Image 1: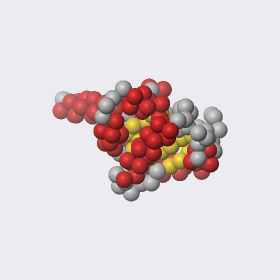
Image 2: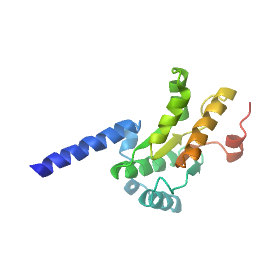
Image 3: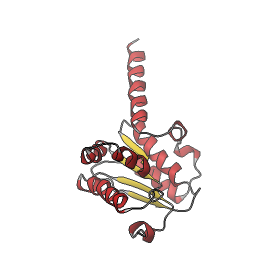
Image 4: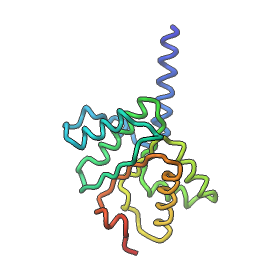
Length: 166
């Protein structure tokens, strides 16, 4: 009976971590076992296996549409959530939508640091403006200053991502 209660409590905690991750149910089911073993997949598996929020570095996943960047990032997040790590996987448009509607923008950006890992999926798809660039910088800088890892997936070439057209 006690083991059943413990198992139920673990499942409730796991469900809460998935809900907090903002991942859609579609991505909550992504696991490494469903991917063909490539050097990139092996790297991502090792990253998840040895993850330490204080020592792990971030990852930039750059490639064309349909190359598996989001899938691989979701696999990392799911592996970490299974280990009890709080993670957030979102896109920058969702962050911007939240920022537009609140007064305490910095407090919200700081709250993103409660997650051991933050994944920004499809960075660069949002409409570019000075405001957007400023907020991207604020989020990335906040993670950097807190010494917390960040994974970014994007379809944009690195040059375009680092020097967007105004």
